[in-house]
Image (cartoon, rainbow, N blue to C red):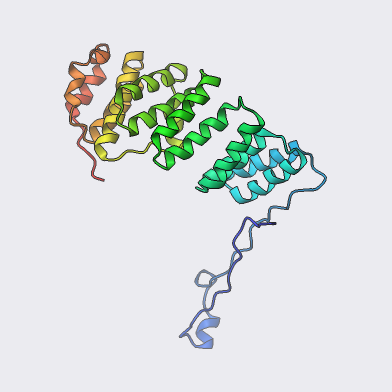
Length: 270
């Protein structure tokens, strides 16, 4: 079905207590004008190739026009029914609208088409994670990692699932591998990825302290101080461990560490 990417403007009726003369003298700044409709997204072309349709779907998904993206991915699959990539992207568009059931079906279809499609296993794990089925999500992330062991995002997702289960040792190990592969992984996921599910402010504070420890161990003082500050602002109760945890040994020599601890940022209310 053809869908438009805009909401039709509705007529606006104004109840006026002004006399006709007063209304005639009203300035333009006092008048309401209905905005013109947004540009429509044309339906998928019957003459476009599967690759062209998929590319247009990618562009629409990037612009958060998920319903239109779905139309284009479906059209691409009509042209190339065996495309695992198109099925996976169709699932992602559904997932972004929190349509977990159809998204899961599309990811499973992608896997049936390509048993080595690591991203589809990972995405099934994301659905389980969003449904708070952390054990199931861990299994899916491990399947993805068995295929692509050098994926920082898969390890990050695995760490988030372990953290949600309060298996902090396993979470730390997974996060450490993610940071080793990509030191900027948490900067990107904080802006674009699925947010880690934290049961309480204390869990969020602990999470940031763990990341501060990981970066300190790697010698990345900038990121370590950043997450250490966040953990303090979120009220991490065991922040004094920073003076004894061996991972912070080098960071404690940094003048910025002493300055931060002297400032002692207070917890920010929810």
